[in-house]
Image 1 (cartoon, one colour):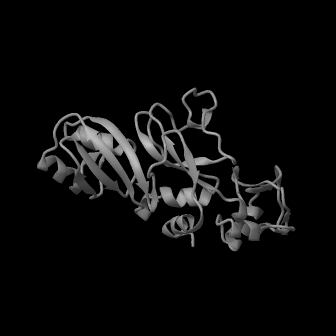
Image 2 (cartoon, one colour):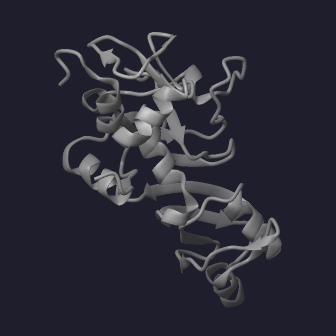
Image 3 (cartoon, helix red, strand yellow):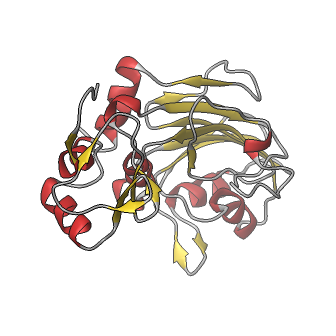
Length: 236
């Protein structure tokens, strides 16, 4: 825990945002502020100071928090206060956080939230192939052709989706594990194959499981679970 002032470049490095060299470059470029003031090279950060880089708050490692939220249907992933359906209208976390990847209004389930911008960025980079698992129900019985095409790749948004694992769970229900996050990807994939999604729930992201967390409730990710998530994201 930070108990006395430390150099700003070390603070940024230990927060996992920038290497010390890159931190010095960002400070020299005027991209870093401490308590709202542009910080010069060699600045110190003290307990209670607010550090921002390119306008985003950088949390000290000892104050980084990660939460799992079971998002209900009808809520929207947005930080806009004017949106009456924003997840943050009812979700009151102990620290300000941003969501990691969206779930659309008609989807539900696991949503990660954190105040660690670097972790969030790493988890959302498509090139890192982080797994996200969903349970999906469609409007008519599944066929082997549908399952094969879903798993091998579907043409949407001027590209072909990555091969993925698809497992039939019932007449109209399947599980799917994606390693990319195109806009409304599962719904678009199904629509391209003449199916319509009627239920979509995310149940896992990387090593984080939704489990029996009640709808509208959250829990904190700590200990070995958090360590594993950070390792998966390439943070350790």
